[in-house]
Length: 180
Image (cartoon, rainbow, N blue to C red; front, side, top):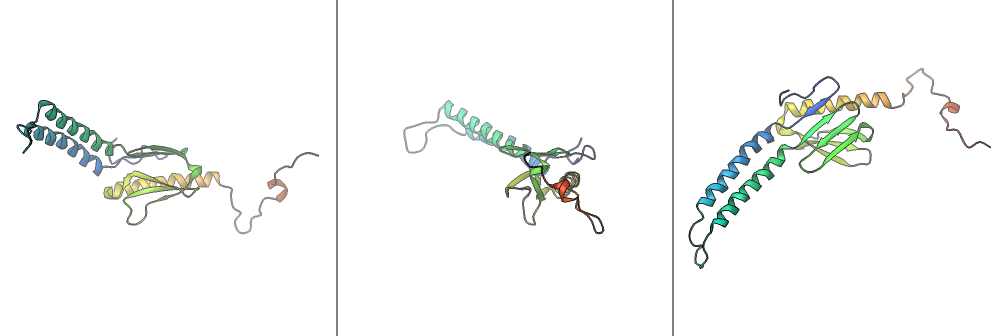
């Protein structure tokens, strides 16, 4: 499966952002190399004081570069996967496993940097895997999520009677009360 693949089969959607991952995989090693080169330059006195840079200071700079590289790589973590049961969203920090019953809508508002899921309790869950900078990949992903959401809604919501059709009788729809 390639990075641009949105659907593994007609009933699933799986998307990871493309552009941010590329940027992060370039930036993380560059950050480590930059801090390593900076640590080589840490020699001699600290300026007007009597203190001098030691080997530990150089190692600490390399360590900061490695730590910074790991932090940058956290931004490669976002992913969204969905099927008929629900949607699983993994963002930079935190994950959500939501059944379609709690999702009111899949939103990608004009000007938004990423898509979001609007829940029935009026919460918004950001979907960082569907980013506007990925253009067609994000559009295809949102369309796939909306199609799965619509299919779930059609299969699980009560059928509204159309014109010329009778509504179910009240006696069938009323809950049974306590027996007397």
